[in-house]
Length: 308
Image (tube, rainbow, N blue to C red; front, top):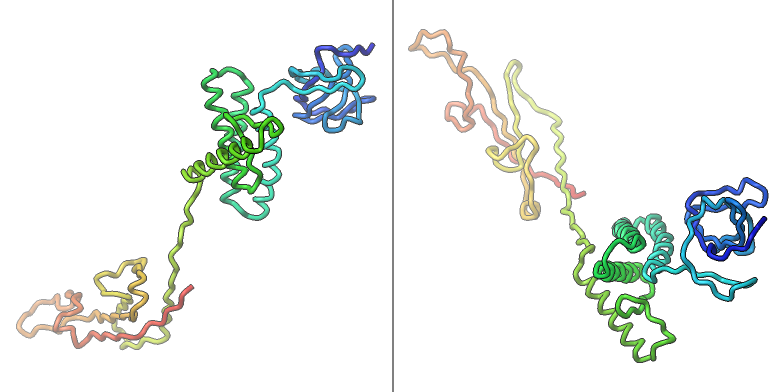
């Protein structure tokens, strides 16, 4: 037999229920329900999202919450008894969640990531307030942090600024226009202070332009049987590195040359005064040696540079 409930009027669904029974009411996790009657392990009521659809659902799927009841009877309404800051965080997260998805679609990655970090902080701080295991001083400090993050997020997303007094949302109907204006000014200054500290603002990194030098050697002539080594460098040969040289803006602005060094590795001429048999074991390695100067050629050509 179904009996009207007295102390069980409001609850939150903690498991998904597909309503696969007669008169069953499908519910999702987090949905708030208004309970009208109970029978054994079942409740009868409706979801706050759709008050016109009534049905039954398991009592074990519902977490009961404290409530206030207004106009008890056929047209009664219930409201949860919870901290105003906790309730505000829930509303803000629902609103930001939709905007957060749009930021990803518009590829605003920087604001997308910053907003995600703030949303995670708000979820964690809201959980701490709900548990009720912290002191009053910690609660005041936590509420100050929450309201600061909410105001910062609203300013970043271009939303309306919520007037506050001692971290609590003020009732516009209970204040005079002058007092309400002063509250707005104070709230705006507090948010401007948060933005001025730049705790989450990033500076744009200016990338230096890349310059590429393309070299194509089409022809090189040498005598048959000779060993030749070619070294290419944009600076002096002593500064040559396997990965090349870094050119700064000053180097790129002035005339740039590509220097090609052609070194001929040859055998020493046989000595007539010595009977040694190791006449071919000495290799010329000094580019500026007088004996090999006639075998070394140095050409300097203009280099054409393309900026990308």
